[in-house]
Image 1: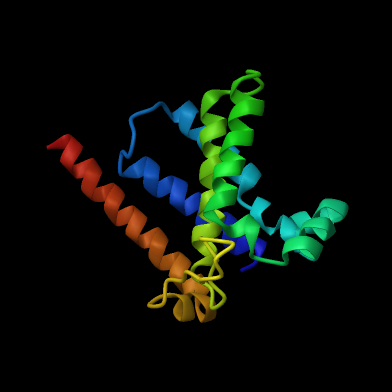
Image 2: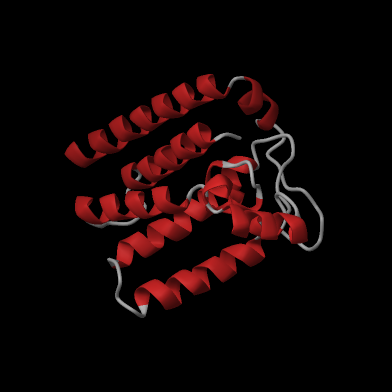
Amino acid sequence: MNIDNHIIFNVISIFILRNINFISISYKDWFYILLGSLLTCMLPDIDHPCSFIGRRFRIISKFIYNIFGHRKITHSLLMILIINFIFKKLILNLNLIPYYIYHGMVIGYINHIIADMFTVSGVPLLWPINIKFKIPLLYKIFYKFNIIIIYILILLILIIKFIFLRKNYN
């Protein structure tokens, strides 16, 4: 999956969470969540030297790629736990950035992995156990017709938003 698809998937995911009133927070805090998620929605691909982020951090990327390969540790539940721990220690404990940016960063990382589940390759969530997790009903469609899926997701978001707005006014 390319950078455009990951960014679009991430933004749509955040928009869905916001519009189904997943949690009740201010618009400013939702903006922080979106900002944080955009900062990290490409981070799992640091394991691929030719990826957008891999080209910017080439030494780290080549190191990870040579030891683990692509879509191994960086696309696993283990790395989600490690990233969460690192973000929490470095960001929250040092009070470097607002609280909701931290949450957005974790969500962005997870969104990337979920989006990659729509690909033919899938992701090894239980790494080092090499079992690939995919969303089989949709990955072929998403792979071939991803722009159509994006438009369908946007339409679904608008329908959900309309339903929830109607409920709030009745």
